[in-house]
Length: 275
Image (cartoon, rainbow, N blue to C red; front, side, top):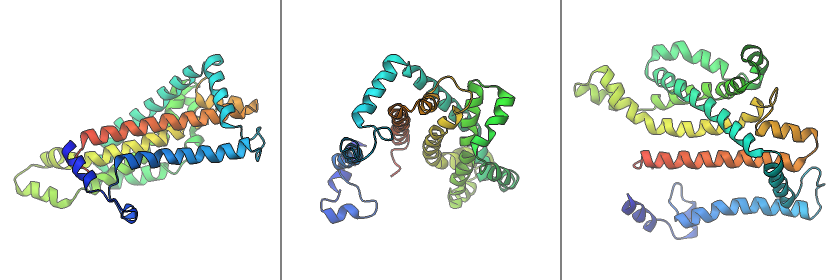
């Protein structure tokens, strides 16, 4: 695998115009430089606006003030506990959605009978905003972690089912027919052809959905919460602590980025043959 990567890098374009060719590989070092440059550009613009006094610090504190706000959150307000609580809620909601959603999506994408029975309902519910379920979930589940996990589950599950169903549908029918021709039974075709062919797409779908799950944490912790990043952000808004709000938002982004990097690493480890 390492030799293959080295050959790809050797064959990577070296001219500037070649870098803009669709799906052409670029050296890993250049990729890293460009990725870091995007963050540096954002930081430079932010610094110009704040240190140059173009924006009132009440509305947009400087990077230094936000950093100091983060230090204070960890040192004085137990922000580590808030982070751990939010990570637990997001991961539990996502894992439950994955455990239930992946099999249902596979069945829906494999059998037209299942698609006809489930897709209209799933498609109908997925357009309902997760925040609309908060009053009901508080009535049904109380105000503990279960209610917040349920919000994240609802925000992730129905999207996941439809995306996995699309992955299963996109498996070439020629592969299935070839398996039947070679004497495979119906269950064998599903287990040895359809499922392996769908796995890369399923893992990639899970990577996208876990990102969506992180976007629901503020909604989940918006009402009747006493801990979590979302709770900290809402509390800071009442006290006009803009630095805390921005640091909380950046923390969610960083946690999501770590999750995304781990998902990409797992994808390449499990499916090194996929481009």
